Amino acid sequence: MNGMTQSCPKCHHVRQPGALAPDWQCPACGVAYAKVSDGLRDQPVRTEVFVARQPSPFAWGKWVAVAVLAYGAWMGWQVSAKHRLQGHDAEQFSSGDVQALAASVKSGDVIIYTTTTCPYCAQAKGWLTQNGFAFTECDAQTSMDCERRLQELGGVGVPFLMVKGKPMKNGFDSDEFLALLKS
Image 1 (cartoon, rainbow, N blue to C red):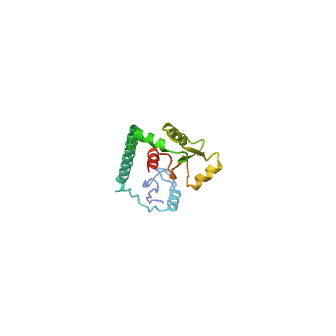
Image 2 (image 1 turned 90 degrees about the horizontal axis):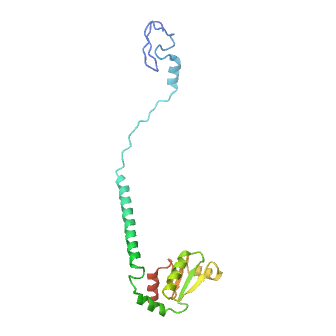
């Protein structure tokens, strides 16, 4: 290198004539020129370019969906609260209507399929008893015959009621029950 200037591949220092470091070493950072040059040749050339991600024009759609779901939940709660405050059977039937229907029910008109561990079955039986309805209970958990009949009727859960030969497949609902008795 005698008399030639050389630039360090690491720190880009230009070697001046008369530098005290050996010819193979950078006087500024102390690295060996050959090692840094070899290391730079072995590194792959980076070709990808960073592109900033643009915000989606549909990001507002998520907020709209959240707002719609929240409104639906609030409306459901409002209807449920109104339903609870008015009483389940108060909307369509007076207490006189309920008593008259209860008096007209004969043994075998109402069959309720239950299990011993079902809390909804206990609630349905309690409502029927409280309002004076005669009913026949068939426990599908303790009786294989009741379980077989429940399956034949298409019941997939309990309580399952047969009201004058018509099924109540979606559990017990007093309004639906009274409507079936009236029809």
